Amino acid sequence: MAAAEVGDDVLDRDPTMRELELRVAGLVGATDALWTPSGSMGNLIALMHHLDRGDAFLAPAGAHVLDNELGTAAWLAGGMPRPLAHDAGPGKVSPAAVRRAAAGGDGPYHALRTTLLCLENTHNAAGGTVTAPDEHAAVVAAARAAKLKVHLDGARLWHAAVALGVPPAALTVGVDTVQVCLSKGLGAPMGSVVAGSAEFVAHARRLRKMLGGGVRQGGVVAAAGLVALDRIDRLAEDHERARALAAGLRERGWQVSTPQTNIVLISVADLTGTLQRFEASGVRAVPMAGQVRLMTHADLTDADIATALERIGPVDAAAVRADGHRPPVRPGAPTSP
Ligand SMILES: *Cc1c(COP(=O)(O)O)cnc(C)c1O
Image 1 (cartoon, helix red, strand yellow):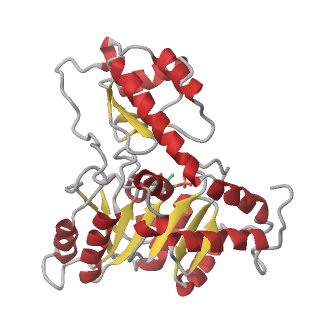
Image 2 (tube, rainbow, N blue to C red):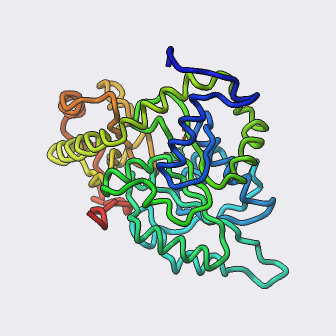
C-alpha cells in the first residue's frame, strides 16, 4: 500500500485503482468495473442504475440488499422490494418462482412494474450457501425471458467459486452487473468492485461521485485489493476451518448448520444471552437471521479454531429450546461438488 503508484481517481483515474478494476472485470467476465468504498455502495449504485422510482425488484428473502443496507434500495434507488422464498434450497430461488413473480400484478393499471432480479451468491443470511453455475444460469434465463435486468450481489462470490472449484466468471453468466467485495475473508481493509458494461461503468462513476464515494489517491487502498485477489484460493482453508468449527460445536451439543463456505450458523433459543456468553469468553459472533453467526477468515489459524471451541464449550440449558423445536432454516450440503 505504501509503495503503490497513485494518481487522482476523481480527476483522471489512479493507475493502481485502474489495474484493480480491470483485473476484477476480467475475473468476473465483465467489460469494465469500478471500485467502491463498500459493497453496500456497489449494490446501491447498481440498483440506482437499473431501477426507476416505483419499479419493483425481486431478491431472495434475507438478501443483503433487502435486510442489511438500511432500506437504501427503496430510499435512494426508489425500488419496491419483493422478497422471494427460498424454494430451491437455502439462499436459492427457482426459475418458476422468478417467472411467477415477474408476471404477477393486478392488471395493467395497478400492477407494479417489476424490472430487476437481484441475486446473492453466496447467500450470507442463509449461511453462506452456494448457487452452482447450472442453477444460476436457469434462474438468469427465466429473468431474461421475463425481461428483467439481473444484478448479482457477489460480495462473497469468491467463496462460491472456491467451494465449487469453478472460475468466478462461471457464476456471473448472463448478469448485467455484479458487485464483489475485497474484504470478505480476503483481508483487504476496505473496498468492493462493481462490474458491467462500459455504459454502466460510465454511469456508475457519476453515481459514485453523487454518493460521495469518489476518492483521490485511491491506489493506496486498491493495492490492498490486489493483494486480496492473490489470496482467493486460500479461502479453501477458511471453508475447511468452518467445517471443523461446526463439527466441534456439534460434538459439544450445539445445533449447527453444515457450512458450505466460511459461515457457521448456530440455532439457539436465547440469541442475546448466547451472544453475550460468547463475547464474555472472548469469541465474537453476530446475530444473523435469528441465529448466531460465526465466521472464519484470513487472520485465523487451526489453533484459533481449537481455542474458540474450548472457550465456547458445551451447550448450556439456556441455549436449548425447551420444546425441542428445531428452527427451519438449515442449509444442507452443496448441490454440486
Ligand atoms: C458484506 C456484504 C455486503 C456489503 O458489504 P459492505 O462492504 O459491508 O457494505 C453486501 N452483500 C453481501 C452478501 C455481503 O455479505
